Length: 107
Image (cartoon, rainbow, N blue to C red; front, side, top):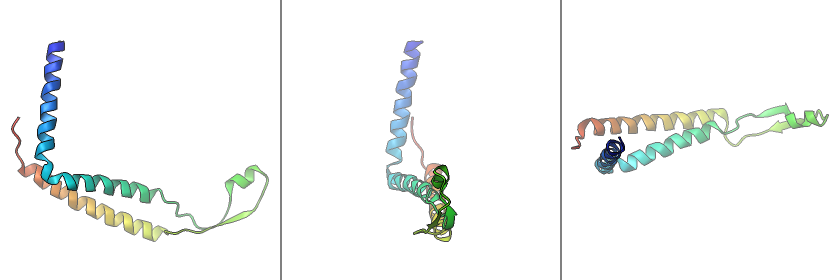
């Protein structure tokens, strides 16, 4: 069984290497796609809470002080940027899908 496992691992390595080489023309698009997805995750993590509110930590210490929150990027800006990034992802994914559909590899 170990001989069969080793052969299967070698076959998998060859397949992955073949795919890696065949995808060279799209490598930049693949990297941009990943970074654009990371950008969306970053944007969605931005705190867009603004206005007056009670600081939750203050309650633990018996304070009722209000805190005024301001933001650099409001919800409209964040949503707009996410929408732009999602549109770019769709475009790049279409390019990759077309490339994958039209590219043959020999195994």
